Length: 409
Image 1 (tube, helix red, strand yellow):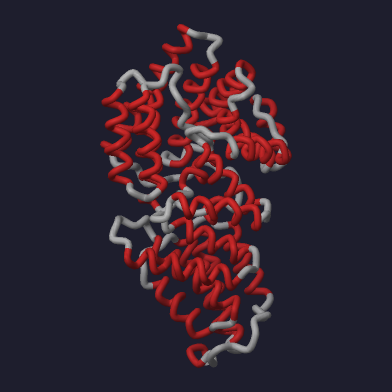
Image 2 (cartoon, helix red, strand yellow; image 1 turned 120 degrees about the vertical axis):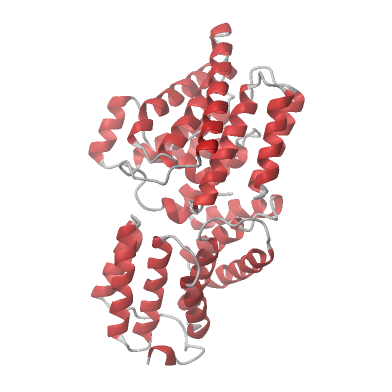
């Protein structure tokens, strides 16, 4: 489930383990996240609640329940894909729809309880790596909520800085704690991706940078057996996509698809990555399998998910020159609820079909719609693509088309 990775790359938080783990609570926490990564959201919440009941004094149990509530909200909103995070790493404060009051209250209750319990442990054991880790994980999750749910990216900085401090201290006390590298590597990568002025401002606040070092930290965390190993793998998958290391990204997805076979979003992200890599046959196979999973899956879907599936496969079909099927998928995407950035990219693909069909006027009209939607939904990559195609007609490199483009003639 890629929400974990996406949230981590805005402001990282982690699950962690309490200083003295209750075996039942710990087992239930891990089971809860396995449900979440399998898209079994109700079971994830129910199991996390059982973990809290098993040990109300376990900060990790309260933190896990809060984290799953946060992940579920992002899923419901449709903020679930790598595409959402391939543009700018940071954005100014944005206006987001308020979360349901009862969900926000429950999140605050459990994350504040997690922090209270962790800080009590830290007062009793000031040189204990686990105690520092638990404090950092709790405040990191608070920062994630502030940035991704409330839209206050800059408002999360102070909390995020404390998360980094606590996890740096945890590693200083116990260098074997590779799970703490998730927070440190994530923030290091974010800082390294900023403009020079913003990067120096981050240095002054106390954040470190360095893209290669950040990737090494996340790779170490993803290879280290811990509660956050899967979360680190998702974060690394996103970074590999940003760095255009598509083969490395696809390598990470294969075992995850085996471990979580009911998580159809893993097929969506694998197919999207294969398309970015130019591996169109692989992308088409993955997305076709994923769409079949999507259509027969009766569990609640993420907002705009159906449109996203058909847009992605439509884009692959455009790339391979299967114009008729591409047009069918793209038009279907426009009939479904969708984020504006997805609709914008659909219009871009339809513009390409019009260009290939020799109807430049229709193509430019599609690109103009794409540009408006991309700007409205803060999609810098979609904006750039629409502007480029408005200036220069799309020229296909696909083989002879499967069918004539009569729908644009």
